[in-house]
Image 1 (cartoon, chains in turn green, brown):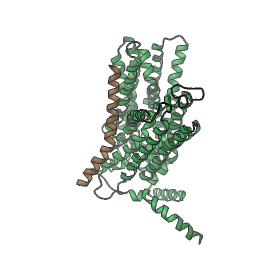
Image 2: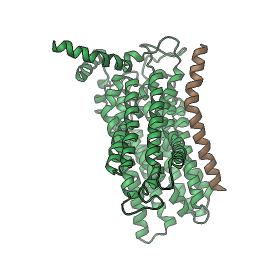
Image 3: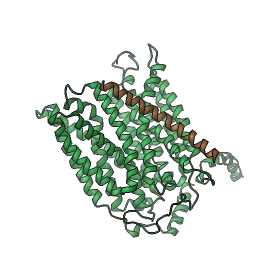
Length: 477
Length: 35
């Protein structure tokens, strides 16, 4: 009787949610794989808003005072934690939910990411309305951070499976969207606040609600159009390699077994060092350019430069990951680390000879490789560990990003303050930083050089695959 | 085939138009800043 009642209650919900199941997302004949990149971009363009969250910081310091901050208003330092929490929970949730995302399929992950991401905005709007910073920490920081992590990894393995011939280009396209999301969110947020504010009220809460609704709709479109390829599907004219190339495996490695391999940790260091070197100077690019070229680069020009560098960051994601399909992942990271270290070492020279053009050229290339580092990693993991659990392994690897997000800015700020405290002029204070960043990249170069094919003892056997898959399903029930 | 083409145009337009708009806005601001 109880079982019957449970069944009666569970059936409608399970029927409705079955739309999200992996089995329901298998593509029918005639489906074109070129619908997958826009599905992925629907997610990444939305969650890329995280990079533009700073546009809300200043208005949120004046929510009570409106025209100027009052003692009851929040400080910029307090608000800075919102972004930091979101990035921390991005890495945390990507690592935690990677296997669930991989086994449940992209639609369920995208749907959940959409609910978390938009829910984070709605909760933050309530937080702004009641002037509760903790609600914003929990809303945007924790709930939104979970949406970020799940959304970031959700389309990766699907893209790799649809584009076995061009995995770098496919994942690069999606991850480029994450960089591009800020370009849309930044002017859109400013415009929304200007439209929704009154002389006695700043329209941050209303802007959060509009953004939350917009992102919910956009991400749901991605969840609806995404499909997984039918078993055994390959693109027309593509012949899958039957034997493994030296650094491109045809075997799959189980997600937790991947953590036992030196390759995972070497690639973890590769990502962490590449991001640390880039993220530290990214946050300081405006102040750095003004202090290195006083009188030549004004505050307004510096903000334009930051926009320009962000464009290179976005374009690099597509360019370098696409190039990696031809030159190989290991060679691509070799270029990032060797060229990056050289460029960081050249920046002090640009300062010495007063060449703004050389400075801009160096940084444009550095930021293109910073973005390229993010975008090429999924294909590198696919080459090492196969396609079966690449999304989950990618999720685990994103903890390197969280770590770099903390270390990079701290390192740059600390070195600068230390130098200035020891009597070095602000213009030269960054030189030591540049040499340290170059050294970090040399360490990354060494880690990358040690990457070898994964030992055959970590490969999944077909029987193991079936047992683990059924155990995973049993575990979820 | 024709239905697929319509879907492709709609899907790429949905993501492409906002992205191009954002990039153009950024470029315009960058150029303004240099002027």
